[in-house]
Length: 406
Image (cartoon, rainbow, N blue to C red):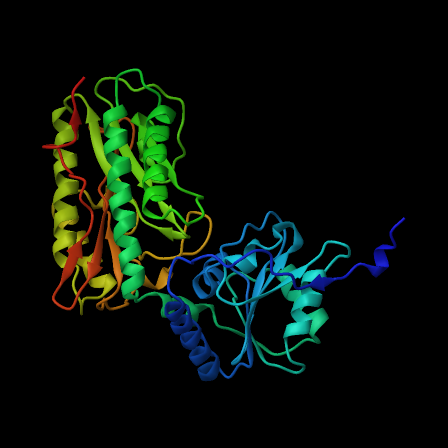
């Protein structure tokens, strides 16, 4: 019988050859240099990253937690991921840094691995928006209650302006979203279920990603296709509801490429919309087009909101507005990440600059019992340039293109 006390808490074991990552080594070096600049500015000796998005951004490795902690310890000289033994050699193969594996033979081996990497007495930068109370207690227990500083806002700000390599990947993501949108539109029929339309879009996008990136890992691409009452929320899951003539439809395609999120969202109708619905749809399209015209370097997120709010107020529709008008893109998903400093909301005063990538996505939610009831939403992706902005979404919007014949 094996004595568990002799089993290691941690070990290092490269397995196989490293594989090409989503970005070049120079790109990851650039990101690490930026993080080390943040460390110097904030006066921290070491950073412990724990979130999926920051670890993926710095190293290229996107972890699958399943209840286990993961981390990345960065000093001015080293960068090491700390990963669970269940993932074996995959984190080492798919990261731009060293790797230490911790085992499950004893509780808290993750923190023992971190202890081995953090110099004694170091001031530590942590992600305050991700480190839970439980894990913060563990950090204090195992590392001797060191001084910690929250570097999450700084790391988020560092991700807002995209590199040329990031923008190239985001462009491909927008192309894939258009492919998914076309597949969904082709699948729309009376009697078809929402889930059937969603699967058509998801399958088309995953095939397209595999063709564009044959050496990648494929995960997390998804679709929300909503109809009727289910269009009222932008994040409502797919159901088995069957489409009926006259339905308002909401098409939402979300390709994920190596942790990078892109999106396409469109309002459609199955058959001709009634007069009230058509008027609301046209008004939201007008708000969308106004928003597209406003995106440029030098304008703040709040100023964009103010202009669209003014238009919707003049139309008597501001009470139907559902959420902010857009957001940033990058390493994010519906369950990790979010670059909150670049959202088109009244309380965000970030000024747009070249290299930022944002959506324009106004939505009106008209409740049941009101003429034209439903959720109306359009969504394009724009790359901010020195002269203005480039719309990289190709799928058409509006009543002239998105009324599906019965």
